[in-house]
Length: 163
Image (tube, rainbow, N blue to C red):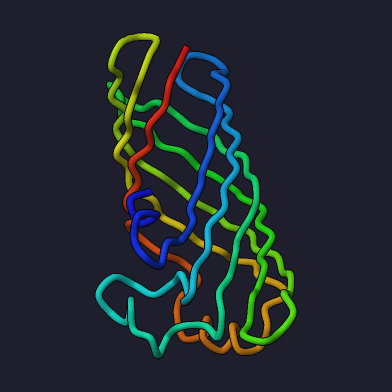
């Protein structure tokens, strides 16, 4: 993730592996972690980056998920994911609290292969929702309730190797 090079990095890491089941589809497994300092439902252009929206600390998400990827047409792919995330809430001068989040994602992208088997890259756009969140501290909940529990049009650029 390019944002990992910025001074206030989200420390984002993502690893995905899939198994092709039949010609057009694949069962996928993913693991991810990232850190954020403000609600993740803030839409582009509104209050993103506004310090008034920041949490009194940060959230570290760690988890794993399962997904299904479908090849649609000449490299066009669509996938659906469900991630189970442990939410670690770090408040200023408070012990870390743990919570849970169900994170759902739909992605549409175009996979370009450079050799077969071999390297590939896939620019994509994701649509995210988190319908279940439990264990949030009150100050985090107050900030989250001002924004939707979904985020549309998140850009992705996945890189990978197939064999």
